[in-house]
Structures are given as structure tokens and as C-alpha cells.
Amino acid sequence: MKKLVLIDGINFYFKGSYVGELDYNGKKVQYIYAFLKNLLSLMKKMEMSGDFVRYVVCWDGGYKERLRISQ
Image: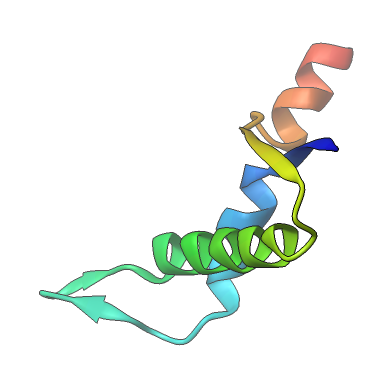
């Protein structure tokens, strides 16, 4: 069976703010690291089902942008 997984990119990205300080050549990489770690973890879980899976990562402008558009 085919599956489509929609991912809230902003949510995955901001989960990185709760990860400890990670540095790579003096640059903070906590957000990128956490995003990729969460994404890979999700992909591993979905692969175990044995189904064909496609992933779509959605990025929105955040709450302030949605509030501005809705007014």
C-alpha cells in the first residue's frame, strides 16, 4: 500500500531549540541536526511497515503570517 506522510517542517525545525548546543567548526547546528534526526527517525519507523512511502515537508510562515492573512 502507498502512503503519503505530510511533515510540519517548522515543528521539526524548532524542536532543535531544545537540543543542547552542538557546534561544527564554530557554527551552531542544533536546528539542522534536530530536523534531520527527527526526519530520519520517522523514515525508519515508516520503513518498518514495508509500504511504499513518500514524504512531503511543508513550511509555512508561522502563526504571525497566518494571523496576518486571516484578517
